[in-house]
Image 1: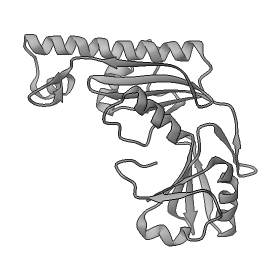
Image 2 (image 1 turned 180 degrees about the vertical axis):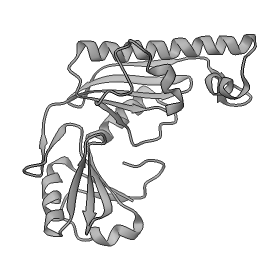
Image 3 (image 1 turned 90 degrees about the horizontal axis):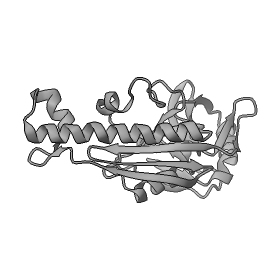
Image 4 (image 1 turned 45 degrees about the vertical axis):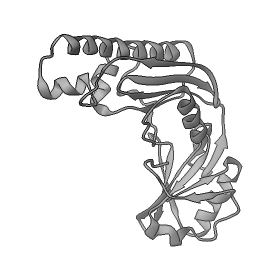
Length: 231
């Protein structure tokens, strides 16, 4: 289950958790608060990306933040740079890298079948260029703009082709933050929709934990079933 909470209600909601003896544990890599009751996790509150968490005052504070988002599936990717939630630059990449009959990317096919024939070599060549161009675009954003976070939606099986030695983007960059959404077709519109979700606060909990979150403060929340994502 998940609830979307309007940003200006976040601190009232956090105060409500304190009044109900819930503990908060901040997870920097997810920009998320884990909600605990008597030492057991009962839910999580994902903070908007343009808010910062103060562990002393236990408040979320609006703060100008800049980030890069990249959403990658085999053969298509959307990359964008955002300043405080506003998209200033973007690019959509496409490549012929999927085996039509099997519906499997050439990279994944080679991992299971070994060497390829002529058609496969074409797909492999386009695959390598596809990731090189994505890497160059993201690296350019990181080099020219003050970037606080890097959000990604990309299978880890593709990481060796994306994070290459000597490039501006590396898999151990502390700014990397996994986008909690499965992106099937990363177009520019999907990139913008993903960004909008990152500007909201989201409470998530299992159905059996719903009893802990009855009668929360007025927060403009909307309750819904989590689909194939974990906002």
